[in-house]
Length: 441
Image (cartoon, rainbow, N blue to C red; front, side):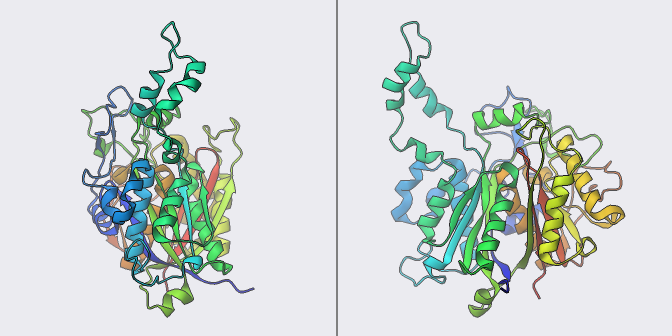
């Protein structure tokens, strides 16, 4: 069977620079970082007290139909990001859905519209938990499991769990935009969005849908989620008094860790024939994807596969899927977090794939400008790749200087002939994803 070609018609990134592609692209080209002291909670007791948060004006109530505003009460921050990203992507694609205009006929038939959204492990808000835990005390004043079952849990709202299930990102998005086609949620840490995009690609290629909302979202701006990152050894030392904008240095010999950023993105992936038939603007083509699983000695991926062999396997798979060779890649967007072990893994993987050619492949690093966006990374990176191809321009790089033969040192934005851009990432847990974004003929 012939495969349907898949194109990108809608870009919906949500980052600390704002809602949509334009504020993000301008900041990346300017080399502006959004990393700053954390506002959401007191992070002064953590190794890193800085990160990249969404702007203060981000309010999900403004991004849903009036009839749906009551549902925002059970939206964790990750869900809010996904909902805003989906609306942005739908609007950018020029689609009419139930979420944009309930009275207009939908551009894509609901049963031909799918949805695949990657998510992280959503942490509960501490104020909700502590209010319930405080009532679950024994006679000695200490936490008692029996009291928790009898009384403490009763203090939680009946819909409490619906706020924190990872699949609720896709649930809310599909309800709002009436996506009745194939839908799924992938929770594979940093690889989540990339793997979700790959699943949407396959669904469209085999004709099970004409379009999909696809991507991922994540927020670690919560003490519990933040603690996980610190215990995983991801953070660079960055107290409130430090200059967070200069802290993250991907692939640099002096790199000392990363800072996280909340955000994510949703893309409208569409069958090329459908997009052309409706006269859609096509940003780029999703020409190939690949995935693999790394062997992890510690079983959870805290200590990554330093050889990079498995990530290289995912990249090779994406290149085969796109029917191109390593020499055809014009730029690379890796995770590039500034965490030494992950950077080394990615460097080794890229050297396995590109060999001596790697020195000529410019690297795009996002973490210094928007933080390490975890499960939301793949969608943001693919959106940036599509924009770079459309503009025939590479964004600026900041902070890194001693990157060896890797073309990842600080540099201004530049015009560049771009046909194919590789996006790739490993993950905590060992899953790897890769995608090739190509210029649409």
